[in-house]
Image (cartoon, helix red, strand yellow):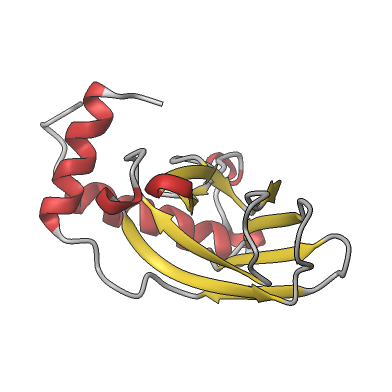
Length: 170
């Protein structure tokens, strides 16, 4: 980590480069035209499974746009016709230590058996997160769209994440 660079100046410089890249391509200097700028996820994104554990769907520092799908099932003894999918951001394996972003409920899944639910996390070019769930047999679907983090990450949370990633790099 380089401490001699002023963080505010680094952010301003990066924003200037990105603004120039998004502007008229004809007026961009040759060196700047060769640069690539990527937006990345600041935290891992995932969902809660049994026991309050987080299954990571999109890892921290993933460039977007990005899409990831995984098939989940319910417990065989579950006699529920709906599934609640809770979405979190953070680096802890336990959701109680991560930041809750939102939830979606998938209703109308068949009783008994092991329904297959395809959960898809997608971040578009603008950084908008869409979480969708589709039950394969009935094709029931629900989607949660998050255009921004509903609550700001406080400094103690960010500090805890920094400490956790120092001792548990992914």
